[in-house]
Amino acid sequence: MISRNSCASFLLFGNVASILLLVHVAFVLPKSISSLALHAPAPTAAAAACQRQRLVSIVTGASGFVGREVVHALRRDAATSSSGAPDCKDEVLCLVRGRRVDEETRYWDGVSRRDAQDCAIRVMPYEMCDGGQTLANALEYAYGGSSSSSDSDDAATSSTKCCVYHVASVFGPTDDHRQTALDNVRGTEEVVKTMSKYAPNIKLVLTSSMAAVRATNQPPKNGRWYTPDDWNTMSQLGTNWGSSYQWSKTQSERRAWELCQQYDVPLTVLCPSFVFGPPSDGVMSNSYSLSLVGQWIRGESEVQSRLCVDVRDAALAHVRAGTSDAANGKRYILSSEARLSSLDVGKALAEIVENSGIGDASSIRCDTLFDGGAIKIGEREVEASELLEKDLGVVCRPTEETMRDMAKTMLL
Image (cartoon, rainbow, N blue to C red; front, side, top):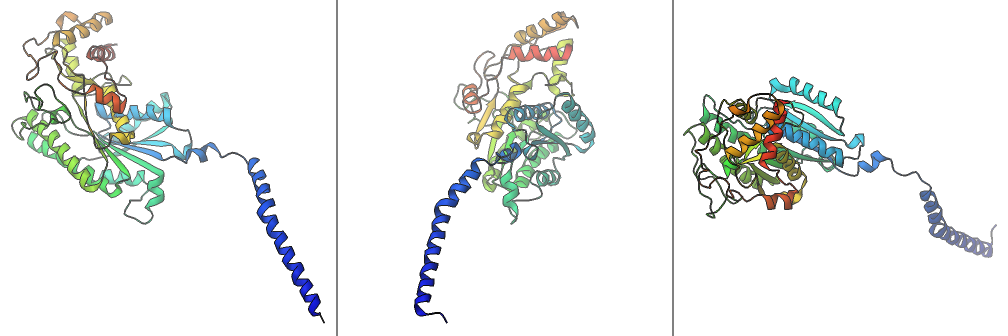
């Protein structure tokens, strides 16, 4: 039998032991754990990299003159920003028409073999007016099959950041320019509505146009030059293919602003003037810009004075707009601020023709009758440089440099 005194001694001993145990847990173990932590291996590069969001860029019209250059710019940007961790590798989805998928896949496979970059390229089919189905397929791939409306969305969307660059639109004469214009608008509407499923964990960069800023001979709102506050109020649907195209770019952009606000999709709009310049890899395409300059060099048509932007600067502006939250809700004009005369453009082209020994520089002819329209050639036509450099860090190169580089690529 245990006496009352023995029980008391036992309880006292137990309490003391418990206290000692608590002291050990509170003061000794943390030091041991800290010591172990100091000698623990550092996180792997892949683990560290996965602390950032994986960036998936989706480019519609990726096989076009501007679209393909945007993809090249995205690859270059990934090379400077990527950590190299395979689990967090950035990816670009090139959306092209179904019949172009195999050709474009071969193109990018060749580029990747020549110039390995830490950015994966995947070519996928895209139709501009299919109810958003092909874009939805690309978005499902980008987000791993999740959308923000599902309960399982958080992990997928928090680990992936997605930006859609909607470059695709039809430019040029068609059998039914009125319907073509309506399709351009419908295509933009479908893009925003399809993206809305993932809002606000997604962003849209819309390639609009100077055609949405002003119509031919439309005077600027401030009476001096065009700014991002100007809108084309004169172009009409159905007048001719040029007017229908200008109307479509204006209406497409207006609808994008309306729908993005409605669905809470962050939006940045870029309004390039006429896009010239050399393709990054020197590969020629059926681009209207390339064919036009080819005609000028061969003397098949007169050199024109055009307000323009270099395709390399336009592509860089797209990438910067897509990765900058400060650009959300803003509209930018992408352009030199004044036209170069046709004589100066012709001189730059003739210089390259003469140096290359290919072609006849004397055959180059210039249109000297056009004076610039509402704003004369040589005068400031747009307000663009300050905002582009301040917000996006983009400085547009001189038109002479663009034309020389373009001619070199085409001739050499």
